[in-house]
Length: 501
Image 1 (cartoon, one colour):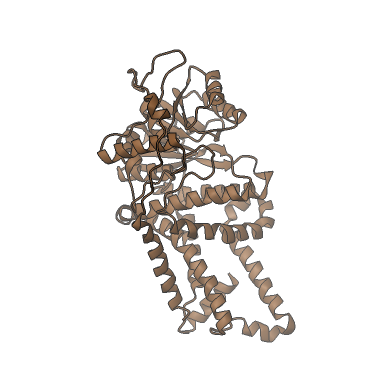
Image 2 (spheres, rainbow, N blue to C red):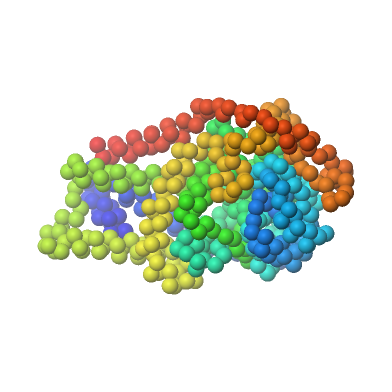
């Protein structure tokens, strides 16, 4: 804030100079004010609503004790059915946990590793009016489900998401930081967008849709490409986009609370945030024409999310350039001349204090809930700036590169050298290009029984050869459209360089 004030004063005094940091700070504050104004109008739905519900849980692997607790809490809230879709390698441990809660909990297996295909299988098997998609490490609290279905009393509502926090956030600085970010979204971004009925991304840890919408958009969900690639990641954002484009509202129910885990290692945190960054920005560009015509405020939220990391990088690069070249105006000259030897101590001190106070204002709602976090603000600022912002830049440039899940062993890996997976994914690709519905290759055989499809008909199991035949991995073709984000980035950097050179 201290630098921002100095730069704004210098520009207002009719100096022919534009400071990127002043632009960056102005955008941050304008976005925060917009969120505050909109979110003050938010109210969760309070009237009860009755609807049949199906819970679909895609799972690759999970600690059995955690998965047992996840299922137990869901079963206690009495949805009409719970369908667990184990994808990838068979997992007898997960199957045995599911059997503990039978018959309300059904489980099926598909050799295809991938959350999207698991969502497709579970949705097709479901029968409820509302399909609730739940991550396998998400823990429900009392009332999660009845609160979640309340907004569906409005027939215009197509998707609803919960308030989300991190399990045991005191475990490490990573979990503290992740929980802080989740709470900030819950207090500002989510209610602001919900007021408009246009939440841009219903987070997938627990997300509810009208089943008929999922069935309506399933083909696009499984096949739609952008910049020449199909991204397995960002399934929640994709389903949200398709629901909005189908003409429905997407909203947030603050009174429905779930807890989820967070990575405990920096490497895994990096991979998680990179996956989210790639998927978010990929979908922003894919959704941009629709947002500009139907949801301009949403376009502001997401475009700003892309622009801010570039502006911050340009600011730092500009400081380095001017420091090395000796160009530009010394905005601290008056302070240094009047304070003598300790001038730089005053300058640095003012920077630190003003930065903490600036962030404290923008985090006031969180700090009201947890005042002790005020003393952690410098760490929050450093991690959010020096760790998260560079990840968003990397994610932007790599959005059109094929990549896997990144944080789960055995999950979709986009090109893994595994003969079974390559064979199955090649079959899916052939079905996709032929225009036929995607093959899920699901084995829905109950123990000792006949394979049964989601609609009650006998299902055909995947041929044994499709699961065991060895095939040479397909050679990955180069995608020239992957250069588009690089071209956009270069243009943005070139425009910023104009202000310095």
